[in-house]
Length: 186
Image 1 (cartoon, one colour):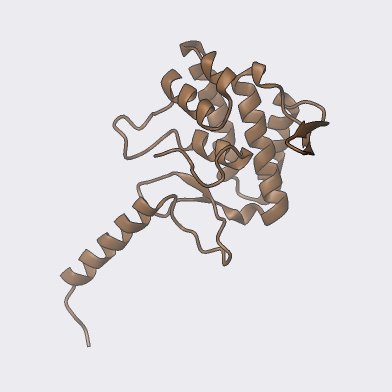
Image 2 (tube, rainbow, N blue to C red):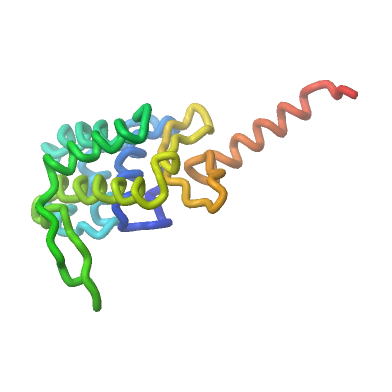
């Protein structure tokens, strides 16, 4: 699974990419190791944290990934929000204003020097903002079995069903082949 291009560096994209570090199409499906963590952190702008990643961080990262996965798999919006609130309470910091470019933003995650926890707190806050802005139903799992990757549906008409174009094409091709094999009725 390639790292998210749309929304790169946003909290929701950071979360999606960490959850998608388990890829049914990879052999083995577990992608999350120190090398992946460094690439993932650097990709989303956490360069300092990426330089400090060690093999000892991998089990902690897998635990955090499981917690973010639980948000996407939550049976209700209320449960997803509760999971995110727990994660932010554990890893986050009191909100504060910080200068970004020519404006201000509210920051409620630790400084990048905190490493992996800072990125995951940022991801959790990003998912909270996503749920607030567009709703829990915009968090989804790919319909292209056996793929289990997650996504945030940014379509206007809420029609996204696949994590990427590759899965959408793969399912469409399989359906096309099935139609060609089926005897015509009518």
